Each structure stands twice: as C-alpha cells, then as structure tokens.
Image (cartoon, rainbow, N blue to C red; front, top):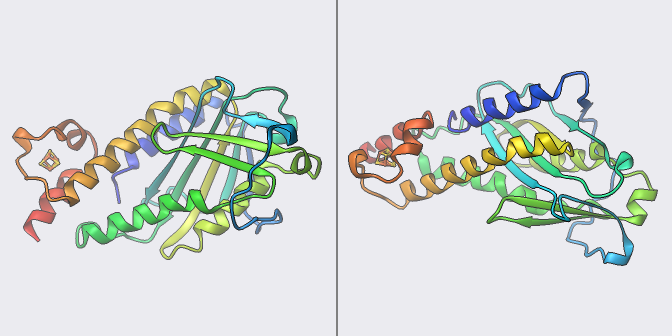
Length: 240
Ligand code: SF4
C-alpha cells in the first residue's frame, strides 16, 4: 500500500520542522480512560476547553501504509497537552496505520473496503468527557472537554490510547501512531494533506465505480500522476 506514502512523507516533514526536542512521545500501554461506548453531548455550561473551534484551524486525517514506517504503537503530542491549554487553540489529529499487506493489486475492492473500515474507527471512539465533532466534508475535528474530565486529569495520551485500542481491534492493523497537534503553525501546515487524502479517496471511489481506463481523457490524471500506485491499481483492475 503505497498510495499514502507521499502524504506520510509530507506529514513527517511537517512534524520534523516542529523540532524533535519539543514533541512528547508516549508508548501505548493500554487505556486507562473510560470509553463511554456511545457519543456524549457536553453542554456549553459544562465545557472546560474547546479545541479547534472559535475560528481556530482544525483538521484530521488517517493514513495507511505497509512500508514499515510505524514500528510501534505510540501517541505523540505537538504543542500544549490538554492540561496545559489556556483559551482557544488549533487542533489536529493525524493517524498513521501500519497494516498487513492489503493486496490491492489482487483485490482492489477488498483493499478499499479495508481502508474505509479503518476510516470509520474515528467515529467509534468515545472518551468520557471528550466530545468529538467531525465534519467529514471539511476534514475538521473539533473537541469539547468537560469540566469533569479536565478535573480528573484527561490527557492526549489517555485519549490516544483509546483510539489505538480501537484500531487494533481491526484485523490487519499492526501498529498505530496517533498524533495530537495544538501548535497553530503546525496545524496550518497539515491542512493541505487532508485535502490530498480526500482526493485519493475520491479517486479510489471513482475507480471502483468502473470509470473508463483512458488516462488521456481522465480528470483524475493529475492525482494518478502524483500518487504512486494509483495507476497500477486502476489499470490492474481492468486487466483482472
Ligand atoms: S489510471 Fe488513468 S484512467 Fe484510471 S483514474 Fe488514473 S488517470 Fe484516470
């Protein structure tokens, strides 16, 4: 699975620009924070903090690779952690998943279904006192943290562990790296990557819908020229 490797590289470059000495890294050691199992509405009067709202930039995206980049489960925090935040902040959450070979060259539908399954995980994690509002259209993700969760010491490491636990329930997921970003400059650098992920997903959808394989007259050509593995995926499908 090479489709996302270009975006992974851009994402890592952005992370590197932040400075290795400033990033906080937490190994995954299971989750100690409660998952409610279903969404919880936190009313405005019970809110301690909001992330990615109030005009602040916000984004989230998920990347899948089989290249060995993610060799362990870990949570990374770029910028202030929840207990250090004061006032409105930018927010991004980026997940990179190392999976078994999805064999997209053999069965494109199965590989694409696996990618979609992985994307759905983000809608099925419900940390107590941590309300996620996702806009699938704009790739935004805004967070509300309750007074109770704040007082009880919620951190990104605890929230991230719940995400990792959920991802690892999906067959084929080997390792998970989840990054939480509250540094505004870094969040802004990541915004274009989410759009690129969207473009790849849309192109995959079109390919699986059975669009013609005439690259010379195809509106997806700029994407396929740029994204390694996309052309092979489409032209391989035709040959199947
Ligand atoms: S491989 Fe060619 S025909 Fe298929 S989506 Fe890409 S540019 Fe279009």
